[in-house]
Length: 305
Image 1 (cartoon, one colour):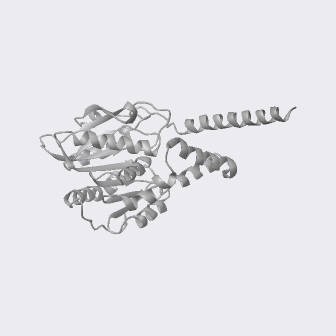
Image 2: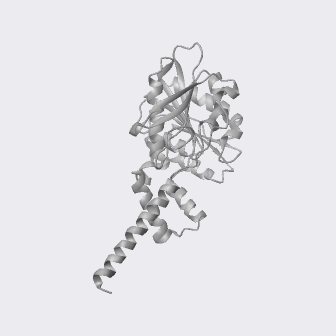
Image 3: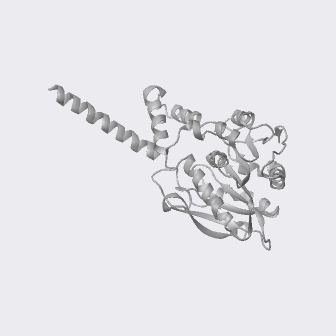
């Protein structure tokens, strides 16, 4: 066998392996699509089904629950986590609505009833959040100067990323945010028994290339100090997906006096414990909306509920 043929076969094998790895990584970046488990009407909420346009001409599905009779009310955008959809955020709508907030429940791309993509990612979740905020700014019944985002898991990390570049976000509530996507990916590799040396290292490097962002640039531990608004961290002390220590690290990383942390008894899904932190959440939003957008709010030390 000639040297040329050996080189050709080696190159062909390398190209094949790279293409295979790329295909598998894209498959891993496609979240499972779940149908809506229920609708706002199931909870006796009057909601409008809307379609929003996001990057690339894709459409996002959302439910908008306005405040009846209000001329200009503050609004809260709810963003679910990976593999979920807007219906799983419904438990938060009634108390927010009762407190006088219009609510937009968004399906991220590749989730719920929103358009598909070859993959989704934390930066794309952030793009979807910002498309929702842009839509809210145009609604006559919404006060465009008082907008907040409540996100769960990846949705929370995306909200913190958006808070570094949006001046119109007055508050972010993070439910179970992780500190760094690198650590999440390392746990994922370990779970599937993928060795980090060579294979795992290449996978993480290629994921960053595919999503078009370095993990360090989008990591909540690095974005929370740059957030332009107050942040409330809500995290379960029994969370076995993202350890509670991540919330403690995020609070420590945030700018002094701008981050509040509420520790709740429970796991990664906060919907079962909404009543435990509801009073703190509403109080946080009220203080954030009342505080001048350019001033710092003073927040409490961690509270265990």
